[in-house]
Image (tube, rainbow, N blue to C red; front, side, top):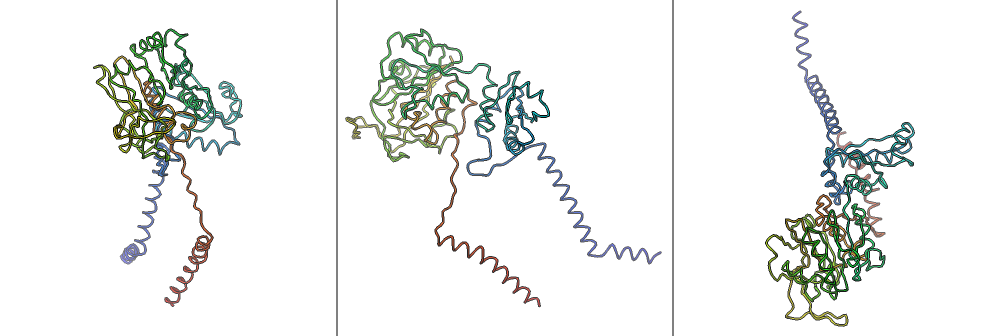
Length: 451
């Protein structure tokens, strides 16, 4: 009996057995940790996008929109058995929405196996996405982020804000598709669920106050006294307005500007730090911190033929006035320009020069004033990096819809590498032939040495 116990002790004391037991225990522990990590990953979705441009994440704007939801919202995707690849791609995107808001949920339905649900949601095609919120539902126009967020925005708003575009003074037209027109601006406003309607103050005696904004885009003719009175009544009652004008145009609403302690300047900003090589097209890379420009630093907004705005006094006590657009310190306000020639004189004001102001009051009045309109024309809004985002943010702030204010979308970076013939040959011989040959020679040398 004693001999058997001694043998068991000797067996259990073997070094190989101890090492084997330790390795088995570590393996079991590792497997347990992996299982637990997968369970947690399924229940608490969290994905970190380490790409430079956040290529695999939804935008900040989408996150802010779903985070502001006060009721549960459900997205239903109708995909058939043949659409598994597309469904997987959409699900990956929808998980980002779930991570942004506890109110967000989604599910998928096969219209072939559940035709009743498909009929109730008026599904006519595979791949259709339906967004449901507070008893309302809307089909997304596509399955990408832009379409899904647009449907969420539309279905979650009981009454969309109306943007009244002022006409009757030769303003820039939202129907004009020329480079100097604003047709793309209408697309931007529609994507953010704004109703866009023209308004002529010689026909309309009032500007609707409820859930509205007045857009004034570079008028060329003066306003009559009655038109100005209509506008003044709208502003005094808490109206909201975005006013844009160019150099060489008339100076609109001079009296109202003076009330706010501001004055249009008869100049053109010349900025040597232009990002497009044209001093007459200043670019803004650094912004004062405001609701409109937060998180926009480093994103270039490009303007063209900008007029500066001067502070000539303080606004009324109840009005808050802030700067949100300025030129660089290496800029000047040229006051001599004739026959297309712009000349900077010693007496001209030096930068930084303000050309964008925000004004608001306790009456809910919100006004944004910009000394340029070209930055939102068809020729600029799609080509400049952050022009569309700046305008979107301006409209969102003026209409008190801060959830729409977002970081500008960053264009994908082309990371293609082009090699010369010599570089290609070097990489081929060093990687395809050199590295394998090095491993073979090293292996032979180690084998020979151990012999």
